[in-house]
Image (tube, rainbow, N blue to C red; front, side):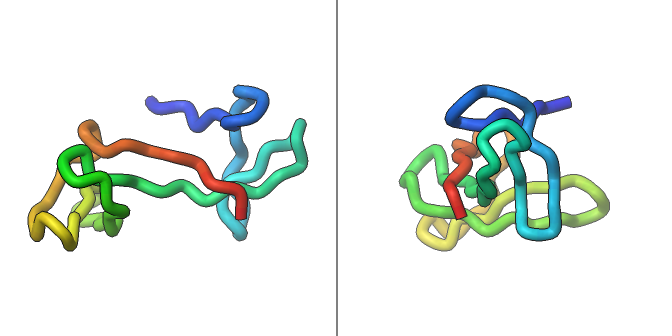
Length: 74
């Protein structure tokens, strides 16, 4: 299972209604996925419980394991 770490202090992020929250830094984060091929932001798709991503620039599905994940302060 993937652990979502705070980009500032590397502690585990907690899910909240607003996104991800770091209890130590007291900061809210949004989790974004970028295409491994063109580096554009991708749309997350959940089908049958298996998340994958769609790149509108490349016009193709990308695997979750290939996506570049980044946490941005919201």
